Amino acid sequence: MKKTLPVIALSFSALLLISACGGNDEETLSESAADTMQDAGDSMSSAADDAMDKAGQATDNMAEAGQDMMEKAQDMTADTAISSEIKAKYIAETDLAAFEIEVGTQDGTVTLDGTVTSEPAKTRAEEIAAEVEGVMSVENNLNVEAAQ
Image (cartoon, rainbow, N blue to C red; front, side):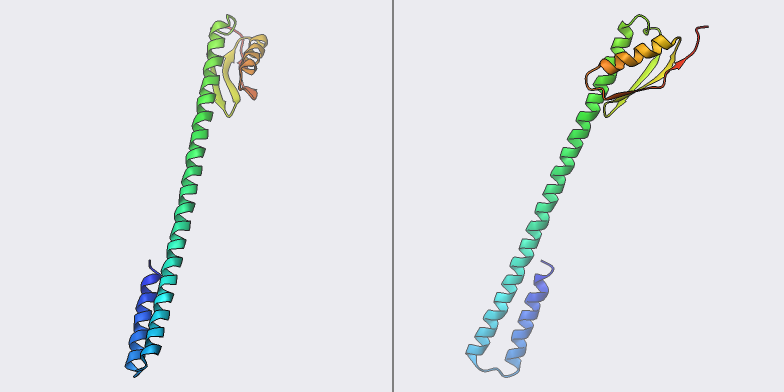
């Protein structure tokens, strides 16, 4: 729309100039007016096409952003489910139930933090985590400290 107003104004200015210069020939004046109006119409059509293209691009961008958000939400939900399942398995495992093992999951990578009292307990914690569906890898940061 910004482009069309100057074109229309310029067109009418040209018509006024032609008539002011003594152009008495009605046919010439009529042809000039028709050409000017055609140019204005073409400019408006072009501006409308540009606006439609930009609206289409904006719609596509919004759809992509929405899809990305949905995928991230699904990933976060899956990661939370993995962590919860691992924690439940630790509670059921008598050798690990007494330890406070922190479990974090991001994009299928599980991170274990905390302290256990033996190497076998550390190894078992990693094995349990690796067995859960959806786990891609396990980063075992558990410290082994003798019981006091």
